[in-house]
Image (tube, rainbow, N blue to C red):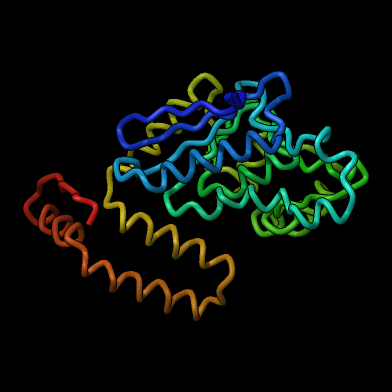
Length: 257
């Protein structure tokens, strides 16, 4: 039987996925990534889940790819199997994913956090791309997403030296949404996810799609794309309910359709 490397918990329209490989600091071995993908697929198809929290341990979110699995691979093997591409399921997930990061988020662990839609960090969080110290480079979007999030020069420094960034600097750079006390991180992430999940699911997913599109679209195309999605919300029952509730000064009851 495959070892259980993640824990799942569903409560009030939120799935909390906890990476659980503490003896290896949550290194991203293939089995862990497969189990993470399965959990995300379950969340995608579960109509009673509106948002996802992805977290790790108190001292380590995830330290990256499992070096024992990578050390002896040839170019042909790593190119053919493209193991790192499996991490992109986090990006592909249509429902909002919140990374709750405490302790170390390094290498692939940092890359997976950046694939999420929101990053909440504990005051103990440390972010880094240390691949250069292993004679290689980031391969899960680290050079691309990091530069977009914090700028070219800081991304260059982190990737070329392996320097880690603490939570306070990450917040100043706009890398993380906000910093909270370590003992409050999970609770804050779940509260945030529950708030998102309480709104119209189609509208939430449209907003996520529009913001994600801004990463690759020129501004004029992005504005046009946003406007079409905005217009599409007028086909939703939830849009009618939301506006009626506002005018009637009552709480909206969304049906997610």
